[in-house]
Image (cartoon, rainbow, N blue to C red):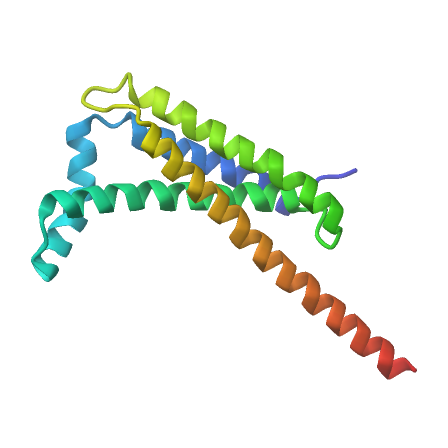
Amino acid sequence: MQLSWKRILICVIPLLIMIFIFVQSALPADLSSEESGFFVDFICRRLKADPEIVTFVVRKAAHMSEYFALGMSLAAAFFTGVTGKEKARVKTVFPAGIIGMVYAVSDEIHQRFVPGRSGELRDVLIDSVGVICGLAFMWFILERRRLKVLQQGSGQQRQKN
């Protein structure tokens, strides 16, 4: 079986996202706060909201979105080649989800060794929800595509008859 560039790229994207998450987690607390500070200031000025609450929401939303992207990319990597084979795709959801969730745990452990950062069970849960949502979103996209192909195929079949 020859690997295409497309297949290789689809498999590399989750690794790139994991590297991005690792780099973000390696930032000391003060640099990490600076990065989210722009969004916090923007939101606080617009909504006259409590900066502490906005900071919490922005940081947790960042967790969720990073892991949503990871879940989507893992789904794409695992589902490639099994599109249209419902049973095979179901079998790939579990390992893709486990990889994303194990990475979330390892990320929080990693943060315990970064100055000013901590590893939190709450963040593992938020990250895991992000992975699951990303997997579910990709499943939905691929399922719509599969149904569209089936509908087009049945329409062409009717035209021949």
